[in-house]
Length: 112
Length: 115
Image (tube, rainbow over all chains, first blue to last red; front, side):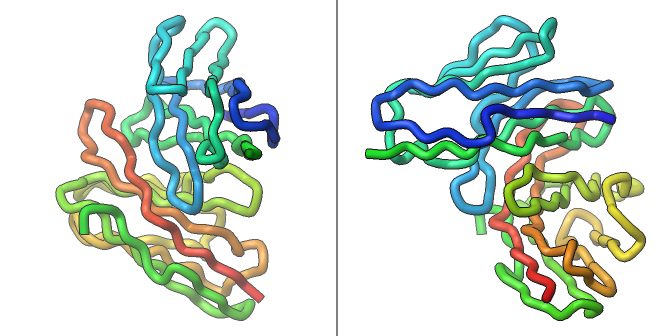
């Protein structure tokens, strides 16, 4: 059965800290790996990764995929309270649907 | 509106009742997805619609769940004879669809509570 596992499940840090969130997957038909940020209800898209070793970067956030290790990390540097959210990792199935297989999420709390 | 909208935002029902959840995708988006998110969990895929093609229903957890979509417009997810384990946030997403990857945009969800 396809699965995506994230760690840690929750994390509490202080403003200015750097955090690393982990995602590992076992998916038969891998197309891409995506990261989402979920603050209230609707997840918002952060990154899509398809190639190993190529870092995607957006401001203080960056992510990289390791297809050999079947994993990805999401880094957030100089964290701010506004980074507090659930971070979801998802793997896109390579079938025609584009359906996403989600991990259980990492809840990040950034304290002032 | 510019984004995906869902209604109602919250729904409280009694065990055994039927409920209907609505999703309005972004105009022009041919692909539409329903996901379920239980408390403290990630999103579970339920069903996928692409244009007029047959839907992918592989994620529906039981025959109490069904969904419809007319063309490329509104979709409704129906849960019959609701059970307490159906309590969750039901999220809808739409995308441009097609062969190339396109971002899924999520709606705000419907929080369903079955008493």
